[in-house]
Image (cartoon, rainbow, N blue to C red; front, side, top):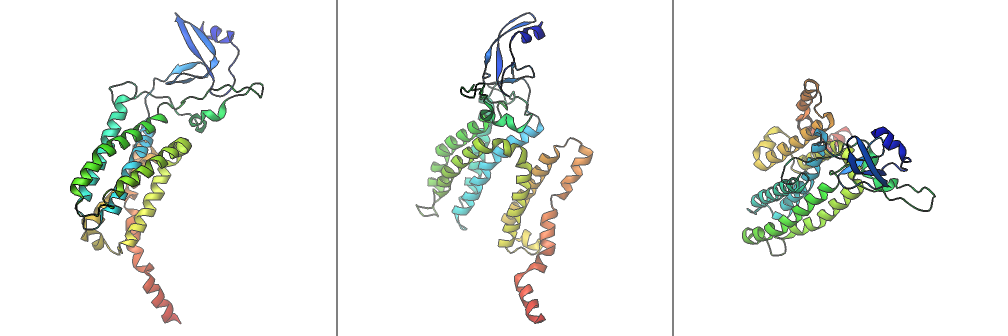
Amino acid sequence: MIGSAVAIHPACLGLYCGRTVLAVNGSLETYGDCGVCPRGQRTDENKICRECVGSPDRYDWLYLGFMAMLPLVLHWFFIEWYSGKKSSSALLQHITALFECSVAAIVTLLVSDPVGSLHIRSCKVKKLSDWYTMLYNPSPDYITTVHCTHEAVYPLYTIVFIYYAFCLVLMMLLRPLLVKKIACGLGKSDRFKSIYAALYFFPVLTVLQAVGGGLLYYAFPYIILVLSLVTLAVYMSASEVESFKDLLVRKKRLVVLVSHWLLHAYGIISISKLDKLEQDLPLLALVPAPALFYVLTAKYTEPSRILSEGGNGH
C-alpha cells in the first residue's frame, strides 16, 4: 500500500527535496508537496522525509570530540602565551577553560533532541554533499529555484554552533572574574589578552564549521596527526630538547609531550575507527615513535655541529 501511495505522486526533483508525511492511516501514508524536509528529518530512497531515529556512530562522536577540542586547545595555547613565565595564574585558567568547555559540551547534549538526555538522535552521513544541501537546490525550468536546504546530517552541523555559543557565554561569565582576581602578576593590559584572543578565534571557528564542516568531517583524523607532529617538533626544537633527560627535567615539557601523545592516539583511533581491535590496537604502539625519532636524531641535526663539520671539511 505504501508503494502504491508513493507511485501516485511524481518523483521529486533535486537530491534533497522530499515529501513530508501528512497523515498515516494504517499502512497508507498521505504525503505533502515536494519541498524541504523539516528539521530532524531527511529523505529516504523514495524521496519521502523520514525522521532521524539513529544514533551517532563512533566516528561521528570522534568528529564531535575533535570540534569540541579545538576551542579548548586554543584557550590553553593563548593562556600559556599571555600568562608569562612567572605567572601562577596559568594553571587555574587552564582548569577554568577545561571546566567551561566540559560544561558547555554537557549542556549542548542536554538541550539537543531528546531534551534532557546525553544521548542524541541523528541522521547517518552518507556522502560529502550531505553537508552542503544548499548547493543542490533544483531549478526545474532554469528560472525558479526549489529551495530544499535542510540539515541532512542532523545534528552534526548545528550542534557545533550551539556548543561554541555555550563556550563563549560561559567564558564571558567566569573567566573575567577569575583573571581579575588571580592574575595579579600581569599588567592590566596583559591579563585579559587570552580572553580577547578567544573573541577572535570563536568567530573563526564558527566560519570554519559553516564553510568546511563536511571537509573537516572526513579530514580531521589526518589534520590531528599532521598538526600534532608539527607542533611537537617545533616545541621540542624551541625547548632545545636533545635527550630524554631534557624532557624529564621540567614537568611542563612532560605535560606537553603526554598531551601530544594523546592527540596522536586520538588521530590513530579516528583513522582506524577501531573496527577490528586485534588489528587496530597495536597501531597505538606507534604513538611515542615521533618523539623517540626526534630525540635519537636531534644530535645529528644540530646546526652548530653541521657548520663545524662543514668548516673542517674545507
